View 1 (cartoon, rainbow, N blue to C red):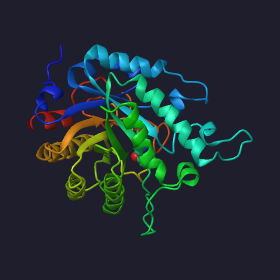
View 2: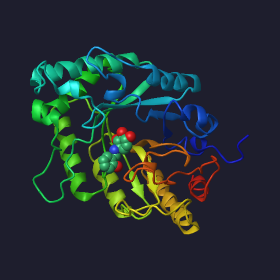
View 3: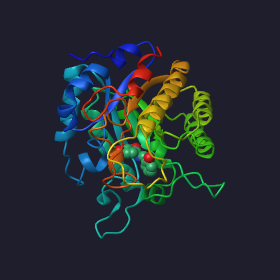
Length: 334
Ligand SMILES: Oc1ccccc1CN[C@@H]1C=C[C@@H](O)[C@H](O)[C@H]1O
């Protein structure tokens, strides 16, 4: 009963159209998801702390609900994420007396985690964000490369290659991605490129680069987006946008006075999304999926980041799941 054309149909010759979901939104957004999307990602439910809160305890109910929905709907499912510095439980890095665990123990724990989680969903998950956000954002130190973390402190940079090798052993069919944000920033772009090139040169099983694409009305520039896609395409791997949203606020804008987006914001958002999807369509040979980090404005992680409780309206569909100007602009490109 939706009048507008289906996004997954409009872009079927270009790339998958995905959405991040939760047990709540596969219910509240069910018909929108089924009509417009052919790929899903669990926003939080497959993260380390969600599925493996204690060394001897796995909690899969929420992840299973999302996997079941994907199976029922015949949708592709992306796994997010196996190695990250956030939403990862403290026990993983601690020994019996509360100190830091040894490198070999950490890697053994990671191997067990990956075997269990990747093995559980190998029938439905076709791609994993194996490693998320290990590249430094440090804009002041030209030599900065990897983000400082407990992973790096304990295991050295070899944990990155190990994660990919463990995931490949657990599911040789799965496509394995490195995933990061601010991916269009020229400095960070060159660090991400250097990391992935290094993994390829070591013969590490890696198949794709995930560009989170947490963008806004003003940045990054179209030139930086294009330069990033061009650079990553030189790696010879498939590219995916993995967490697309277009915030109506610049990252540093801390205003909290809006209860709805202005008409000017909605117009500008339409122009931004049209420019973005024209660019993605131009590079469709390199891009295998575009996943939004949500589906409609009734819920976005941006309602709590960077300011808790500050509403945002980053998607193509409004709070009542009606197509916005941004949808109209994206729908008329193909
Ligand atoms: O845009 C950012 C700015 C600073 C840190 C992290 C990010 C993005 N970080 C992403 C966002 C939301 C989480 O649900 C995802 O798992 C994570 O990959």
